[in-house]
Image (cartoon, rainbow, N blue to C red; front, top):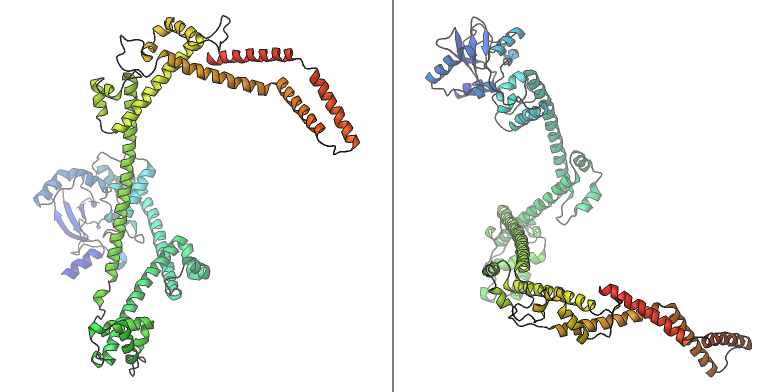
Length: 611
């Protein structure tokens, strides 16, 4: 019975059961061998995959009576309303018939209806709201093809070699089936998808074939785990297997397969070495008896073991056995003999299996991934913390600008200056040391602003009637004028220098005289520097300096013995005389007048700069 049921499911889709629907005009509910259901009427030779509109209520009541869960309207509408009937495989069975040998209501199961009847069936179906009405054709096509692809690897996978009518029941109930508006579009896109699917399968088959050939090349040519991929590529880049893999895939694929084979080869060699060592231990058990060597285990050092091994390896037949040379290293053979003689025979439990090594490698990779994620999380937290600290520092600086305006206030006094200031410091994001540093920077900024205001007042009252700065004006002259100036009186400067005693109660770190002395020292130093700069840039002074050097050089030459010929001496004498003549014509009073003009220009530039 199970065999019969299985053959029915895999064979052609044929009518299996037909049940009359009560209170209808000869309608039947027909179930096929594949579990599909359609509705047929004998006298009109009409068959429908969906419930006809005129018997919709009767069918629902009938199915409820049978205990069948009614299919929702949306699911019914997902079926193709004017869908062609499933084409039965007539070449296998000769003619289409019901399982009982008679025709269901005189019609084929589901028959190839005429065009006029299809139009009537389409007009008679229930019209539901189409959720894909506003969907563009290309989007609907993409959804439709994605739906067909999603069935790959499932029991309802679409066979691209099968006809449309045969494969339709596998996806007619899918929601994306209705993404295309007409039956013709659905069939055309189905055929297009089948072409893509066939090409994909051929490509997969070709790729699989090239990968198998390349894998065979690796197994044949790469016998050492120390082989480098670059050397392998240079040696076999013209090999047909390598060329075929590059054609069907890429070099990265070849490199991955190469390293995968190296890992497999490493595992294989470890396994072979372990098996060879086990066989070697069995060889020792067969040919040598440890009782022949009366050596206590506690006295079995390496030197003693070497002496025993020198005798034991001469045992007849031992070295001739293939298991002896299977352990390729003489040192390793002695180590195994030493372990065997001492009773510490290596067993399979001392060697980890391939699965254990893979599990350990996987655990190590997972631990590395966890560490990397933790590092990235720490960096993200640090970045967020830095951004938060920067924001809090900006807020704190703004708070200082809005609240702290006394340049001589102390940190202790500022803590109780305002109730909100204390809460600002207690936020915890910015450390107390950093807050203290920002507080001091703010005070330095306030003091710098006050000193700039004082400098402008000092400069203002250091000018003469013509507006020229007077470097010889002292504090006795300037300070009374500053104190009487309304600009000074109405500004915070008196509090800054500690002269507004009615308001200022805190210790002040300066006074007006000290500020003037500091400003005057700066003024004198700047004037001197600018004067020297003017002298270096003045052409007259430069000429006089070079002339003095020439005179000094002449005097040195007169004191030294003659080293040149008479002609050269005559030329030098004429040059020296001409320079001395020019020097004798210099007027000291003219030089003083030139320098006075330069000094006047310099003081004028100081006035502009100070103002």
